[in-house]
Picture 1 (cartoon, rainbow, N blue to C red):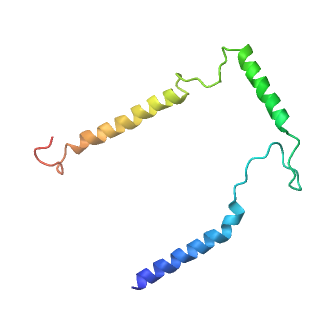
Picture 2 (cartoon, rainbow, N blue to C red; picture 1 turned 135 degrees about the horizontal axis):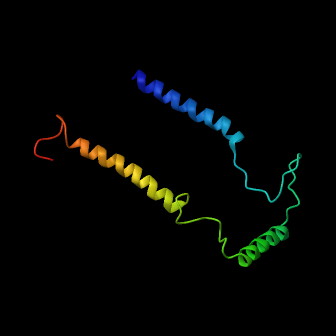
Length: 111
């Protein structure tokens, strides 16, 4: 009974503590531009954002060889990292499965 009381009291204390500190950890939406010292937003307007996006699209259209800048089939990309991690973790798990079939604790007749 005493353990349940201590657990309940600690959970209530954690909930109140999280509620107290939660206001300082609020995530605000991103502002367009820099925020001034008095909280005002910057001068980065929607028209400026659209102009920057238009320039980026033109840059990619003028230089199609560069692409998006994300190499897909190289070792430092998504597919390369997936292959390398699959090889490493697959090798470790294969070794553990192999070692699990041997030894004095392996069940008889299962391997």
